[in-house]
Image (tube, rainbow, N blue to C red):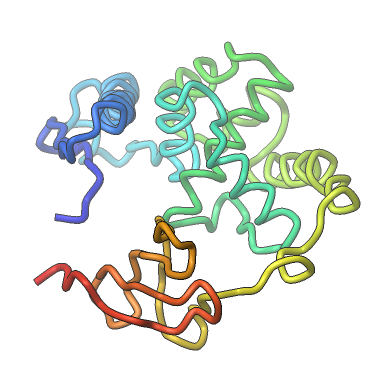
Length: 234
């Protein structure tokens, strides 16, 4: 539960959830099969290669970025939103250190940058070079003369060129709107999928402010909780 799908190299299998959305199912299926394809390309005889001293470690940003980019059909709106916000507000993490949800979006963006600057054929070249050289660091240098850190610097610089000019074109939300939820005060990780009442005075939201993801009714005026209508994850 709560896993969006995964691919296991040792067991040579793909595990896929189905949550009722065929578009989500298509995306996850394509994402995980991309992992399976990559594992087969890099390791071939999976167990033998994974246990050998020459096992090549695929960086997480490349593994998830490659799968995400080609399963999303490039850079999608959600990814663009996250990268813009992260670049402007300074919370993006260097590729080699990135993890969690952010590594999917950062990797997706980094793959887009490689394709945009060096061409799509470079992705195949990196994978094949990594297999022959048994090193992703060597394959990156062979493909375009940069190591992982150098690529990260070039990619970050490109993001700033793309997104920072938009600062002058946009307002901060606090300049024209009132914040109704505050995760730092209520301890929540997510407050999402708002739905307004017909009168517009109340909003239904998913929130995990009490550790479980539940559905609350809050005031559209001041954000105070009016009712909890669904107790979730029990």
